[in-house]
Length: 357
Image 1 (cartoon, rainbow, N blue to C red):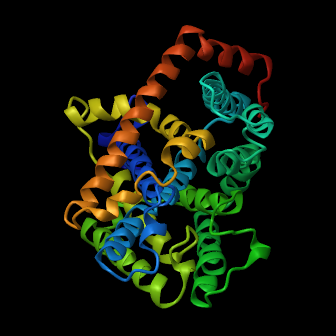
Image 2 (image 1 turned 30 degrees about the horizontal axis):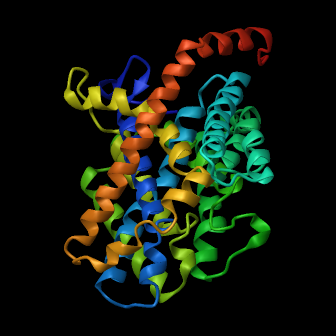
């Protein structure tokens, strides 16, 4: 196994290059929701004009963000110590948002159904957030996954990665054939996160310096162009999360940030330290079903009536505003959890219910 050479980008146990990728990826995810849930993709559908082209260029630019997130999970998680408190911590954060936001809507007189309350109390199994449910399932199996992967040689793991990529990504895309038996519904499930987790774990083993920055940038840009072209010339499967071009682009972007050198005393590092812990909260806040229903759904439809030159900036501005508002809410949540000493409770929980190695 080749040891990492990134001492300049890892300080105090943090990998600030990957933290920066988390922040950027979450912003990209917000942009996808401006386009999708905000009503822009449906507004431009069937109109082969400049708005349609710009909308889908932006969509392809940002759609690989979820794949980047899952790659980070594998890269970081493969050597991490397994704790049951990780499951509890994620559940508590999700429950805070599902229960609190649902309660606020009920208090302010909005229609809140019994189904909304059921989902609020059981956010993981009800699938309130598809990524969280899929990731939570992955976490349950993480000891088995990590033990299995660590038992493989570098060559065996490389072969596994290539085999998975060919069978689960390349062949279905080339044949333009969704394979439901693989449980890969566009990539919105645990199976695809597991595949990306394994790829991320493999990237942890190799020397990422062997990849030239110029080549990575070329691969990333070509993957975006190919995704756009193949989506409209072959089929939608080429822009789903399982797309080989979208996946290659995400891997290239991941390597670029994994090698990024962040100055310990620089301004960028200070920004990362502030924003990185809040990325998951941004996701949970702005994508709560009631937030989507009453505030996000189709809010951006009128953007298409503005100048095409202003159009992308409206999308960007909406994404920034949503991110900042959700970030503020997450900072409040972090303060509340700090005030009730939740981290101490997690340490107590680990002491009482340790995972035995």
